[in-house]
Image (cartoon, rainbow, N blue to C red; front, top):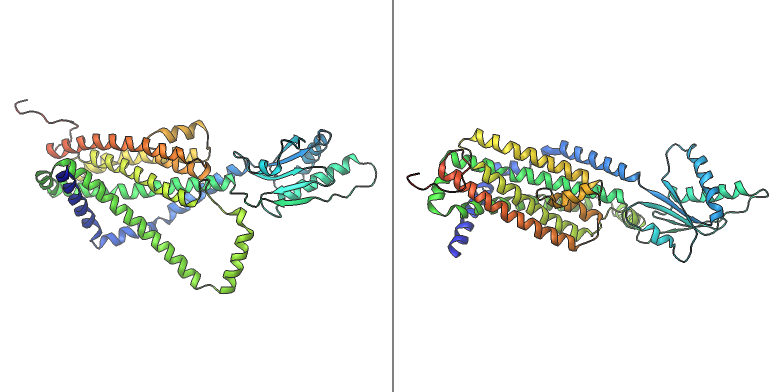
Length: 415
């Protein structure tokens, strides 16, 4: 086992340095600069997800049973005169013992923009965002409902506005974060795992792979290549993280200190509007990286195993095309599930092995459960081991035979 691990590390270090220690690696690092178009496409998709999720928002009014019909009639009349359709109004009969406006505003599954409770003359309005149009709309509803049912002078309406101290992030923003996680993992996996095929094509063309096969066990060659390319992927991500942090620090140093102080005060006022994943940023980033590793190992192992069956560069490209198309299909599946958390489609995407890393990353943005991610990583690790095992057999058959066959075993002499 020690010799096996030593050979695997040697192959991994060789492949890592063969890629990193070349001038062309700089162009590879700067490849994301040429993918601005794809980033814009991802932003447009996230915007569409946010718009679709925003339609599920609601306003809640907890009033006496005698006021429900008056509020419903006023709401129907006001909606026809508004240029933009307000959120769906949900009316509940008053039950102070069980209906807590703050708890309702923080219910999962729907964006609650504002909650009205108490008497219409002195309503208590809990808003997600201070000074929002949703809270003013509920105050207008209360005033118009009083006007419609009062024959004499209109009583004064003195609403008491409250904002959530930690209202959290809206469902729309969290779904946008989920879509962003799916898009980033898909893009990095497709960009970085695809390099395994090009390297394999080069080594099969100049017979280097045969020299490696004669020197060390093929299992060590396969796992070493996979780990070597994973190291390149980690270096790629670390480079861009350092660039992003450095760019942010440079931008801060160029700003006026007074503007920074003003921005700090504004950020405190807009704390409830900040986009935050359900599990929190530290866990979200850590689990997102873990899911990227799982996705990379799955796709990289498939690329290596299938690519070894080809005898020429053209055959390798033709064999890798169906894998790429399949991965694009997984991206479409996970993007759709990100906009429908908790649905049957999302559950299927989270269970299916090749879409599970992307779908579970999207779930981390909208669901605060943490234990389910540990189960998902275990489930994905089982499939990584299975795919690696099958790919090693394919790799052995392709390298030893030198032809495009799909044997999982060696033929004995004389057969």
